[in-house]
Length: 138
Ligand code: TYD
Image (cartoon, rainbow, N blue to C red; front, top):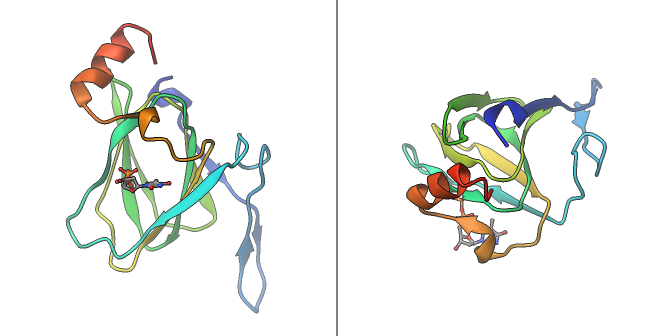
């Protein structure tokens, strides 16, 4: 996988004077079956999250509130996506390094994952990531 496989995906937006509504479904807006969801909140100013890759896990990230940047690195190139609306999300395939930063006050990152939590799926050392990437192992 490379940064070209990362995609911003628009979500349906049901506009209503009572308040807007968006949604996402398995294999529809989200291109995998959701096995887990988690969210990041109360991120102190200046903090970074992420800093790892997954061997198998695919993710879909939405800025449910506020804004933050997601930088994706495929070992050759990097690309930064700013997420700041709740009606689109970022699809991140497996095997890509990600960093999340510049969280605005009270921002919430909602993340859908294609796997249940498994620490063995994480690659937390950047050098190991580069090695696996250059060997074609991820
Ligand atoms: P981690 O994925 O490293 O955080 P981030 O990438 O958002 O900076 O997870 C931080 C800790 O939370 C780690 O010790 C594992 C735990 N955790 C779970 O137990 N279940 C989960 O679904 C996730 C995402 C993390």
